[in-house]
Image 1: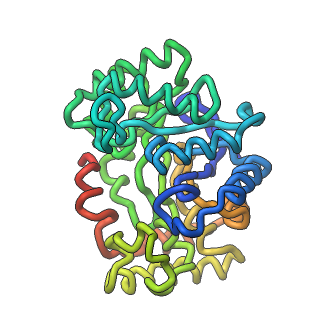
Image 2: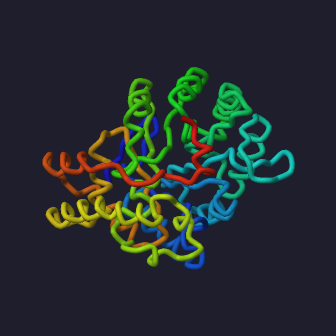
Length: 325
């Protein structure tokens, strides 16, 4: 597995997103034992970058990751996120990046993850009630205290990224980027490259759609979050299969899987991009890690670049309302 350095943080080129092990996808199929095996196998394959968040579950995903890395902490670049859960008032779930809430959040994450520091600590969503300068200010204090090593943002606008970076260097931005979500290329990616900030794409496989495993909405469990995602609904689902079919055709040409081609395309976009495909299965993490060895020709890349945009918004209205534009 190749490694890259983004703003002083060295991590595997392909990481592992742990969210689906505990939340959102096929909840009836949750298997913590297999999830722990998956994390261990990822580490064996050279995947060092593990991503979680306090809101996944909530809390149980961080606990799961903590159990999996016990005794292996020095092998891991550990990333987690704060800001969607409120800890200082009613305890309800809403965006809060006030300094007081950040300090509550970090202590909980450290305890659940069984560590004394977080390598990369993200603001999960921008808090419209708290100036980003205040949030980054307390994060900078946590860096000084050694509780976090690097600061990250998630789903922040270009203007917010600039304001945050002016207070303390931001190491990475996390947002969706894949062959069916490319809007980041217009404004966000140029700003990141101007400032020397890395990009960590979540859902680089389009919530699993780009793997080709789904040919009908009947293939998705009823308790699965994707049942409500606009790109998985009705005619959008059928229209988006054309993207998968193009990827599969190239995969057949290079003796790879559609997932590996989708990841290889993303890796070809630059050494400052480190995707975190999620899975809870050993076989899938082996497949994803092997994408590091897939070679696409210029012709293949041009063909993938020319794919038309996905049909449907990338999230429903409620989720899109939390994404800063």
